[in-house]
Length: 255
Image (cartoon, rainbow, N blue to C red; front, side, top):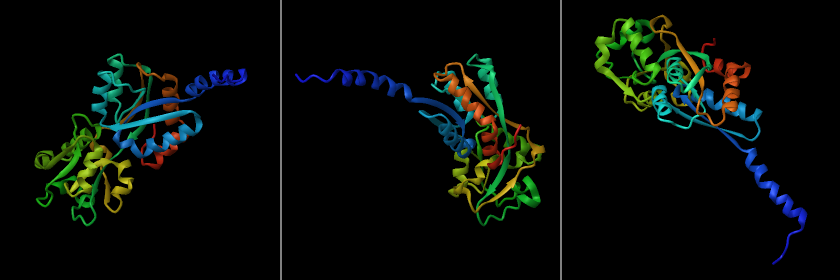
């Protein structure tokens, strides 16, 4: 049997633990409306944290809360509104000291190219027109932007007239898909999502912010986090100068 020199054996003995320790993974559950902004923040954060890999999972905030209650292995939860992080605290799945509001979401109507629906002049009353057959939105049971849409329709006095036209997506991402594939005549989406290349060419009409409650988007470090320090560092990045600049570029309001 051939023997390795002593220095080589010593080198091998220490290499494996060092390499293993260098790799750290941060798992984040993020509301679907944050996709573009969160991907950009991920790149910025990883550039500042050598050896750290950020894994982003996107979906409806209510669905994530149910998964967190069931023990899903996330370190950080970036919600579409503050209600779900508050539920996390109430369930003792996170601490109030680890929760931060990082942005104000804005609601917009998106119309496909060539649409004749006059949301700009008629406002939400235009949705009652018989020519409008299907209105896409996120399911209000799990998605804060879906609840904001219902609130706006009620405030505008058109909810009863259009409720039979509503097509519910499991998240705002699916609501956007309905509109871009022709399955809906109009979609109500986070304004940030209307900047996506898939929605280029459509008409974006912001919904009057007086028609729906302010959407406070908040993040919280989870009590079961495997990397709590990294989770706090990422949330600090989101609420810091670089994160705020990214959020502003994607049309979010800032606290």
